Image (cartoon, rainbow, N blue to C red; front, side, top):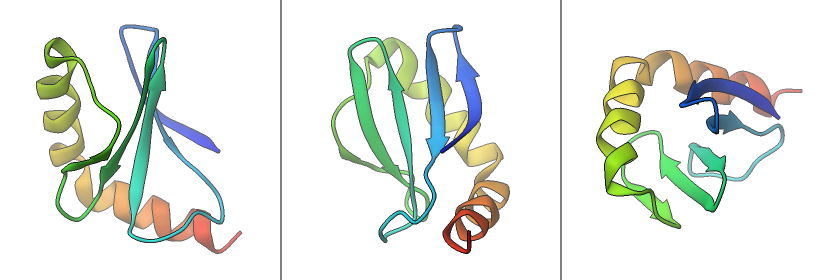
Length: 77
């Protein structure tokens, strides 16, 4: 598991090695445990507080290509 980005020093985006498709990241911390599809940037499991959701999705959108490459790299380990 690798932390890719932190939010408010409490929440983090994680990529996990040998994870299943579709390509996704885990957004975890506190009471949040959500999955976000990297191709569509849709939350596919769990939920993110409205106050964080916009910031997280904008951050992912800005780094989408990098995150997809990192996801692929993590699956080869």
